[in-house]
Length: 194
Image (cartoon, rainbow, N blue to C red; front, side):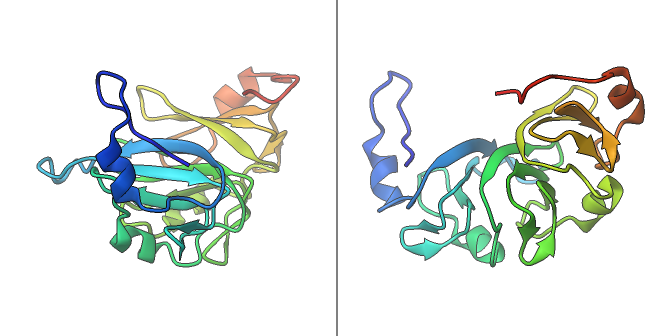
């Protein structure tokens, strides 16, 4: 389900071997997760999709790999029951927090409709979802981080926190909908961004 290439474009067989049997279903998103508090620590890779296992171990649609391709078992164990449907987008904020979008509605049995933020250790950041309110009304498939820390979200959503948005909206870095941006969009996009 995933491979790494060397800088010359050749398959990195050591990474693939370390990964083992890999994922049991489709991968939609990947992001490099650096730890700003530990600059000596090698970057890790977050992977999201429809998969439910990694090397036959349950990970439920989100997992983290170490820099060498081995599963990060501490992070993956902390995910617990994980997400109840596909993860389609991953964004890493400057502080190491992880914003995740998809077609899921729950994380570890807690309601998080289509968008959630996790702490660097994989636990749910409940303040983000409290600031978000009721959240998007449909799947989030795209995430982008702006220079000021604001978060663009795109997908099937037509409302955010019960306010009409045409498949694109912006959040402040803490998850609060950016009303000025969302109002300026007007009716928004007429189809889902891909």
